Image (cartoon, rainbow, N blue to C red; front, side, top):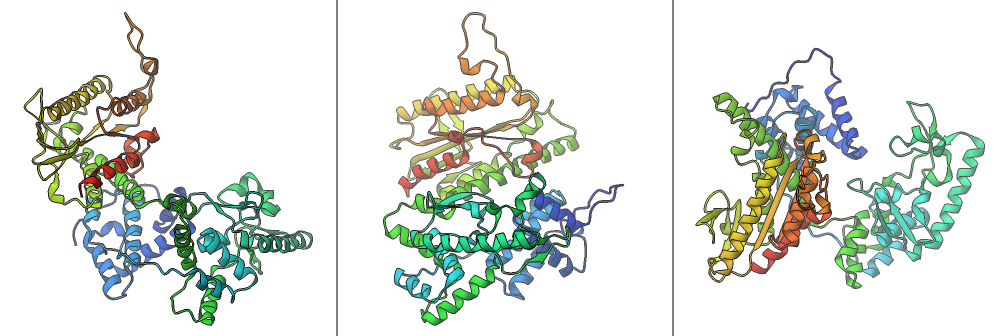
Length: 545
């Protein structure tokens, strides 16, 4: 067994491990399904290794558990990866251990599967064997592109007949969105809600029946649980008694009711396809595209983000974690050797903190189908300059003797920001001027105009947010700099690098040390987001496939 990490002892009793897991999940507002899945996998992991505490186990134990799932249990790749994510959450967020070795654990690659799609005729044929509530639910899956639970969790207030639209609350990723109310279902849905209201009014008159409210809204407005607008569009026929409060509740229709109805209807239609509830959602998207709708519109209706958005979001979170972990490790190493640089400069001189961002950009290069042999990082990163012999960049893309891209990734942490800010500005502008002048003078042979990128990470702390005065002995500074904090100055700086065409794109993100270790970061301005930077970079690379 390797990579064992010991927990520090604490004089105060802590909640049980699984209770800690639940608390951390709920604090992040993860869905109940995620909580159920994560707790289940962590419990299986502990039992698999003989009820040992996870803090006493390491990489070998995790790989043994994942291998057991794949080899003995024959689980799907997505199931194995869900188990891994649960363990990753356990070690990083609950136990708060430095587990950089987790990134090297071998994981299953999720294969690309083509979704089952029904033709319009097949959809109509299956719908002939569905009736009443089952027909309505499936028609919303197909006509509005809803997921099954999104449909069943609709409340009366979420259906807007006037605007013919449906508001999906807390969909996948805890995000809201608006989608269309299909005209073919409008009349039936109105009639259905009329019947639901009659039952609701009967419940009010006969006994105290409530509906579950989202989050902690029941504390703010306890009477809302008996208001019409909060009731389920598709309520269950039975009620249940809440063990905690003793109150009677009516839940929404269980998903298995619709799943079984779809299986029966498909069997009776004799369509030779494996049809699930999700198949109607895929068919919705396909038919919209066939009708000429652009893919962005379809993605918005489905609540999807394009793949590059997810790649950038996940990659940036990992890069931020890597930054703060590496920074702390380098400082500790210098302290151990007794040659700690003055102040906090040790966190800068070690290098490698921004490698996570370069990893992300390398992934984008792969997405553009450019060979990795064209990517240069750490070695062979020098370019000729005009005002100096060479300049080292953090990342270069060179293909067939053509310079395609050069990227600089910089950062700054407190407590001192003044002189460092000035140095960063002068360095970035000087490097850009040097490169573009060398480009004009044919230093890069017949290269087309390259992509020049600048990425900056700033520590979010009191010193970076504090207003800073300026000296104006002769002339007034530009108004945007008056009393601007260093965070605001860096934002202006990065934006002006692009506006003045010194750089093709720039990204600016901030995070505190505590949040950074959890992969949480902020984007002060959308025009300087990592996603926008990445998409501009990808668009440029696409011309050189």
